[in-house]
Structure formats: structure tokens, C-alpha cells
Length: 183
Length: 285
Image (cartoon, rainbow over all chains, first blue to last red; front, side):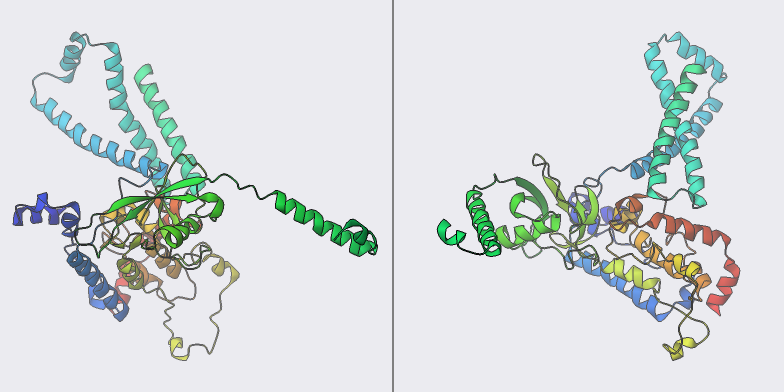
């Protein structure tokens, strides 16, 4: 990412060049960032030299990168992981932002709830908004428990991963519906 | 042979001749050709020798009636009969060498183990392993992957100096300890798992990837190896292991049914539990 920005500043037309050329400029900044560089064995030295040669050679030859995101099958594993990351980022951004905004604005949050009530919006829109607000925290929390189990190396075989994945998604939707309609 | 001649033969010879005559009649009747089952294969093509060539998809039609059941059979048929310039790696054709790993129908597998989808209405899409530099057509540059494997020192290391007299004595191991290697040693280093990992896509320079990490774990957990702490200490940085976010695409895609995700989870557990200060002293001694 940093290399991309550097490339675009250095050569004005970098962003206009083909994808392959741009991606080939994404060479790593430092290949070896290990804590034990002082005690590397000969084998490791050869290995890291080979890695540097790999990046130099492929950049020089301007080889294309094989397609990845646009061709890979969306699997339950990767989609649930993406959802976990997306809900996590969404909450990490909106919660402090909303809290800071409410802190700065006059009056407490109940006056803003009154304001929204006075807008007399379609109840369907309000329910949809409630789903959007409730789902991230429910899903992220329940999938978080799945992640904690993984940290103890529990439930890693494929069958359990898939079963727990379906269970987490179903439970998250259920709890979200519960929060929206019962609270 | 005419019927009077046949009837003069002894019973055994007569029955044999009658059987042969029936079979010949059957074969000659069954010469009506089966209707061709044409399957489309859309294959990623790129030629480094053609200046200014851009990667593109090329579609081939293969008659499944005259082709073996696996995708590799179709690729070889295309190369033999339709387009000799199609380039791909292959060797054992039985799923043990790891050469023909590629992205078929959106998932990474071995072409020799992947059955052709019988649905004639859909084209099978074949791409090289994702997010790898392409040498030509379906051949990726695997040097980085192999260098990362080399960096974990995938061989037995002893501290008692017995490697000076290698072969003198067997290194004994209990059946329980040997069982710990099951599910780890069978890896054929096809790179399907590492190239299915989005984390490896974005950080293939510093993150080792599931295949290499599973082999690192294989040596950590081998009771005959004396360098477990040092091997764990090698992983003490932000990238080598900890770019794994348990996405679990690796275990889903492994064509040999292995579980790299579990191995990485166990490495993380070992990293949490082992004595890192002691290992640092040992490593820097």
C-alpha cells in the first residue's frame, strides 16, 4: 500500500499504467523483519537471499499477477471471516464517532430520539435501521466466541468449522431479530 | 465356421466357438456412435514471448466421451489435439506430486484429482494459483514459496552431536509420538492452501502461509527434534505466524484433506505457553 502511494507520487502517470505494472511496483519494503537476525543459520540466509531475488526478478520481468479476489469462490469460511472484520471495523468507527458527536452537540440523546420520532418515518425504515444497528454487535460477539475457541485450538476440523459457522450466523440473526422486535 | 462344422466339435470347443460368434455379432451391431458430449473449458492464457500480450481467457471444447474423467485429462487432451502451446505443470497424475495445483471452478485443487463437472451447460473456468506471478499460462512462480519452506529448516536437528555419526543408531520414537505426525507429514507442498489464503495474498513476502507453517509445526512436534524452542522463537514477530486471522480457506481447499488451520492454531498455543526468554538465550548462545 505504501509502495503504491510512493509510486504514484514519484511518477505522475503511475496510476494510469496497467494493473500489472502497478502491482509489480508493490515490492515489499523489507523482506526480513525477524527478531533473531543475529543468529540466522546458513539455510535461513540462503532462503532470504532467494526471496529477495524472487521479488527483484518478477518486478524486472513485469510478470502479471494471477487473478485472486474476482475469481476465487466465496466460501463460508472466508465470507464469515469477512463479515467479522466488516462488523468489527463498522463498530470501531461508528461507536466512538457517534459518542464524540453526541458529546459535542447540545442536549442529551433522548432529545435526538424524540426528534427521530417526530420525523414520523415509515416503521419499516425504522425496523430496517434497527436491524442494521443490532446485527454487527450480535454477529461479532457470537463469532468472537468461535474465535476464542479457535485460540485454544478447539473446533478446527472442517466439519466442526462449517457446523459452528452456520450455527453462529443463524444464532446472530435470531438474537438480532430478538433485540429488534422484543426490546 | 458353419453350423454343421460347429456341431461336429466336442462340447467344450463347441461352446467356446459359439461364444466367440455371439460376441462378434454383438460388437458389430454396437458400432452406432454415441452422441458427443461437448464440455467447454475456459482457460487463463498469457504468453511472455508475445510482446504486449495481456492475460486473457481462451475457451476449448472437449468431447467428454473420448476424455478421461479428471480435469488434467482434459488439459492433456487439449494440448495433444487442439493447442500444443497450452502450458501447465503435471507429473504423477495421481495426486501425490503436487505439480498440477491450479484454481479450477473457483477453488484451488490438483487437476489430476478434480473430476470434470458433467454439466455441459456451464464452462469450467481454469486459472493459475491466485495472487502468484505467472511465468506462462497456468504456471506460477513458486520460488518464494520454496524459499519460505527452506527458511523454516525442514529437517531433523539434534543437540547431542549425533549428527556427526548419522546412521549409526536409530532415533527411537514411541507410537504415541509418531501419531502426532499424522495429518502433518502427508503434505505434498502443492501450495493450494497458501494461495487460497487472503492474508497470504496481501503479505506473501513476510507471512509464511499455511503450508509452510504446517511443516514448521510438523518439525516442532517431532519428538526426535531437539530445537523446538528455537523453532518457536523464529516465529516471534508480527508477520511470520500472526498474519493468520483464522479465515480457514486453507483447510477448506486442501486436496489431500489436511488441516493447516489447526496446525497454525497449535503453533499459536505453543507460542503462548513456551518459555520465550529461555529460547532467546538459547538462540543467541
